[in-house]
Amino acid sequence: MRTRPDVITDLRVGKRVVHLDEHGFLIDPEEWDTDIAEALATRQDIRLTDDHWDVISFMREFLTEHGVAADARFVMRFLNDRAAARGKSGRGLLFELFPYGYVGQACRISGMRQPRAWSTG
Image (cartoon, rainbow, N blue to C red; front, side, top):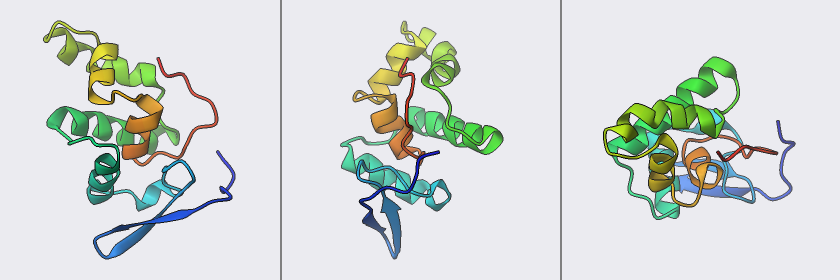
C-alpha cells in the first residue's frame, strides 16, 4: 500500500467531497460509489457503457474479495468471452474501453489506490 501522498486534492461530487492523490486516484477506496465513478470517468473523457460498468464491478468485487486491485491480466481474462464474440481479445477490448491504460483509467475510475508497480498486460 502506498503511503499518504504529499499532495491531496478534493473532488466535489454532489454534496460530497472525496480526496484524490496527485495523480487523481482516490486516497480511500471506501469513498467510491457510482457517482464518483461517473465524475472520475468524465475527467478522463469517458462515457461509461455497460461494458465499462461490468469491468468496474469485476474490479470492485476483486478488491473486496482479495484486498488488492486485480492485475490487468485478470480483467483481460474476464473480458475474453465477450471480446471473442466481437472478434477481439480481452486485452483489445480492455484497451478499447480504457484507451489510456488499465492503471491510468480503469483503476482510477474504479476507485483503486494508485499502485506502486503494476503489470499493464
